[in-house]
Amino acid sequence: MILIDKNQIQQRVIELAKEIDNSRDLTHPLTVISILNGSIVFTADLIRQLNGYIYLDSIKASSYKGTTSTGVLAINNLNHIDNIENTDILLVDDILDTGLTLHNITNVISNMKPKSLKTCVLLDKKECRKVPFEATFVGFNIPNNFVIGYGLDHNGLYRNRPDIHTLDS
Ligand code: IMP
Ligand code: MG
Image (cartoon, rainbow, N blue to C red):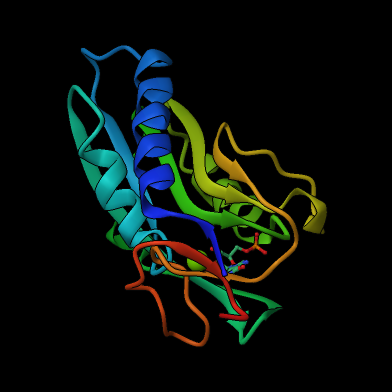
């Protein structure tokens, strides 16, 4: 079943980019860090709606096997990130669920002393938190269903679907 169709996503991405731009000084660069693989599609659309000077980087994190979080978070690529001391960072993820991914990654990045650190997620399953975490910018609040499409996968598949579906279809 389609939960959020591609037109709704496109409209919300435009609004989110406006919210992000309105919160920053457009004369200063912003480093967008995409959390791979899930947020590839969202990040690609989001950065093309942002104005000013945008750097793009990425890190890889994974904690899911099937539809359940293993609770074990692997963070790779972090040392590929250029020196982020004194830079404004926007961390982008596809979905906020238990909160473990963003809780851990924001801790690691905060220790690298960026000038500012904000987070943006397309989807938020608020009722699933295991650790307290709120993203600075949220696209859609959704119920506790496993969703696929628009970058979100189930065992690596369905990331290519343009709409967001619940897994049952
Ligand atoms: P958290 O660490 O539990 O907040 O989970 C965040 C990560 O889990 C996301 O970046 C996704 O990769 C994955 N995830 C959580 N819920 C879903 C879902 O419904 N569909 C696909 N991936 C999900
Ligand atoms: Mg992910």
